[in-house]
Image 1 (cartoon, rainbow, N blue to C red):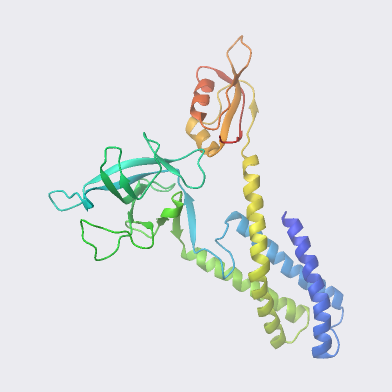
Image 2: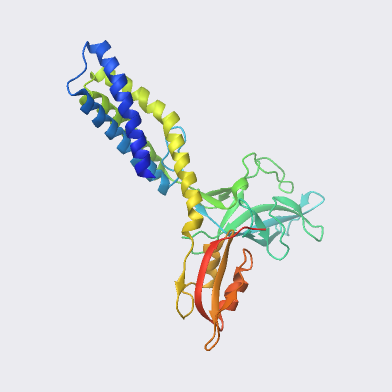
Length: 341
């Protein structure tokens, strides 16, 4: 894919440098520079190489090192579960304890294996997460915080909901920015995307700005020492082409590569092995590998018996694992994409 991008960009910019440069230099300087075809090829190769490298960087961290106009100044961490801390209410007013603090209760939510987007379901009831509402017993509640344990967190961390300033303590209201912010930090979770923790990163901002700056420098080098435009003309052309490329070409290339990576990801999950012995992954690891929309399939057999297929399902992965792991031996197994019904 990257080689194809490089070839297409190289050909396109070679035509622009050759044709446009020939006309521009003939008009500005009466005659083009010597060895003009070779210079056009070198300039196009330089720009195409940098663009291809930039696309490769974005493939590893989508959006983090995008153009001036689109980059995201944070990194992301996906989560599969959290605890919702609720404030209980009666008649629209919060219940307060003897110290005047809201009474809290905790409910655990897990990401739906077959769900779309960031749907989280309550343990025990299967109800989807809501900011406020009523329990099955009729008790009103308001979600005041989330407790999340990230990959590098030794203990779960509390993320408090943003509330409007100046509202009564027993009648809080959510701020227009619907998000939960880390209690003693800068990380946050947006309500419309509960499966992602956003981590502001100064280093990511600096790196994105540096890449964009180098991109402009690459255009200057292409127009000035390589194509032999004057420094003033090179700066004008380089700035114009850099901005135009960042507004038109780069978003298309980034989007195409991200979509290609997303469509190729399910196929890359499949793993197979043959021979006797327990599977090398524990049940929790299978769940993380499979979810969402993947199933477990395999053959199990005991000594002296023929292989027996293990049922294949998009939701009953734990059950399928239990039948395979104990007391049977695994003959073959795989994790592969399954349609969710």
